[in-house]
Each structure stands twice: as C-alpha cells, then as structure tokens.
Length: 200
Image (cartoon, rainbow, N blue to C red; front, top):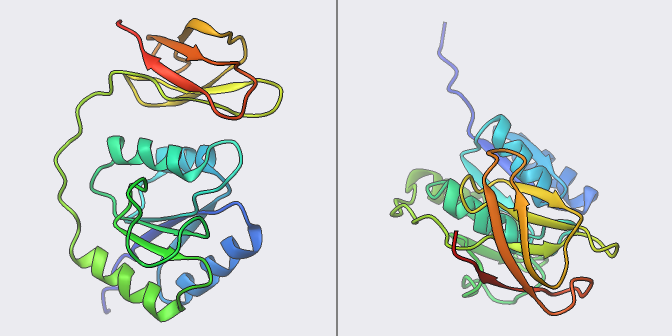
C-alpha cells in the first residue's frame, strides 16, 4: 500500500469566526491539518496540546492580541514559522513591531500567494538562535473590569491576576509556582499599561 505522508499542521489564530472557518476550508483543501483559535489565549492552549508546523495569526484580537501571543511564541517556539495577516499595516514587508516571518495585509493578497508563502516557509524552516530568559513579565489589561493576564518570566505561561494595583505587584504563577514581580506605572484600568522589570 502507498504511504500517505503526514500532513503539515497549521494553527490559525483569528477572532473573526468567518475568516477562521474560511482559512480552515482553504488550507484543508490543500491537504493541511488545520486548527483554529479565537485569540492568543486559545492559541497558547492549542500549542500545549500539539505543536503546529506553521502559525497564521491576526494582530488585533480580544483578551490576548497577536503582538502578545507572538512574543510568547517567539521565545518558547523560536523555530515555528509565523505568518501574520492583519489590517493594522499595509504593504507586504514585515512591520518592525511584528515578530513574524511573513506579512499579508487583510484584503491585499490572494489565496495562491498565501499557499506559496506557506510552502516556502515549510521548506526553508527558519533557524533562529534561542532567546535568553526575559528579565520582566509581560502585563496587559484583559478586560474593562481591571483583570490582568501576566506572562511568567520563568516558564513563559500566561495566567490571570485580578488583584492588581498601581506600583509594585507580586503574583504567583499558576503553573510553575514562581513569584512574578512587576511594577505598573499609570492607572491599572487604562487600556495601556507600562511595566518595568523588577529584580527577582
């Protein structure tokens, strides 16, 4: 009997269910095994279950956006190729602030261009040096009630923190038990929160 090659796995992280389903249909028809996630939190959960061969991600999503999701991906899984498809930027060059191997503006490309880029990335898997351990935890507002999500600087997993105030904060990682130290500068209920690294 002929041997059927194992299909490449693609993870689509996109909050629009219509676009997510369309991506699954188009890529599934090309022979890929496709999983979907509606935001960065679901994307990280999907990565815990099985690692994809390539990630396609939006940038603007609720709860955990693409910038935050990809910063964790690049540190934990630096060799997984990433394609960003977003309306945040124009042109085909990768924006400086985006940790990706390829970029397509929403509505500014066709399916064949995407297929070709996927094949190119899968056959020329990037070889990046491992990134050192971060010296600070990433913190961002999860919703308008002031609930935060914190990325542990030790295990790089993300967990929710509800009791957060301006100034110095400590939170125990739900996964590895390490204490994460961070300082919030500004009011914690604002949409954007600046952070400073704290010594361990």
